[in-house]
Length: 424
Image (cartoon, rainbow, N blue to C red; front, side, top):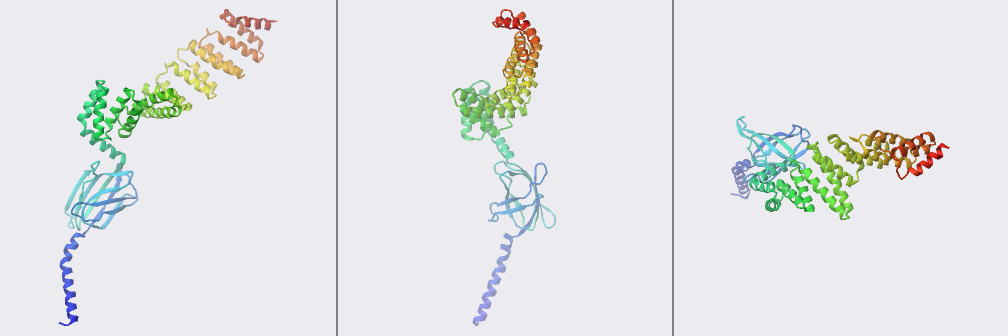
């Protein structure tokens, strides 16, 4: 055999060897068709994102991504066959549910799988056979849903221990609660109900700083826990009061403000909670959020109109903000008005008199007389107000009425001198 023939024989042998090995290689990369949709739980398309296909054991060695278009659809006609675990490349969403159907070239069913994702491990591994037509219907959910699912699994696994801690709480054994929840959180720091129980126990035992941190974590982990926002707000409020008394005014103001915001959150689910309504007003006062406090007081009045103290607080805020007319109207509307309400109106009118707002002072004093006709000082201030306006007849009448009602008052001697001077 000459050299040329030898080379041809070698080439023929190589081709034969390749052909013999080709079926095995082709079987490994035999393509499959994948199509499907990706939607949110409400049925709307998620939009442009990528699906990540991670090979399962004994399958292809290369992970692949598949683009989803703005309408939530995707398709790939030559995807490598194999077993894959599918996930979503996103910081905001995760794959919560899959419906997977696979058909042979003949149209016969090959795979039919429908499954929710495990909160930690995700969707199950799916088999994509060669030359098959595969259909995926994927549902995505907000990442917070995944956190809730993880919490549900963790709570179920720790149900016996949590029940024991709850029973200790009902028995007012706060030391026992702290011991039990400490063990639980050492094993699972993200166990929301344990954070909640521990936070309340810490608050009840006066450990305010640790209670605030623990309840903040509970709010993050189990925001749906009834009362969690209210308990956290109460811990913040007590911590703010403690800081204020120790001179930490900046920290106190910050915690008063946060407490007010979390009382507001509590009211979203329990709008008639008298405790939350009242404490929100206290927190807003500590935070010096005057306009917000006015709104909060009005909300409290709607639920508890008999709380006389809040009328005086509201009037004081209106006065502070220069809304004197509203302050007077508020004081005039105090339920079962008497001397206290009349005195409060009188005090506002003294400021009006000092500011030379005589007409408004006269209007306010008329309200005071309506509230309590026996409050003598209103006639005294009216007399001086009319005197300042130059209306001597009215001034004289008011001062005489005052002396008639309060003849032994410290101002009586001076007022008599003024009356005698006016009559001359």
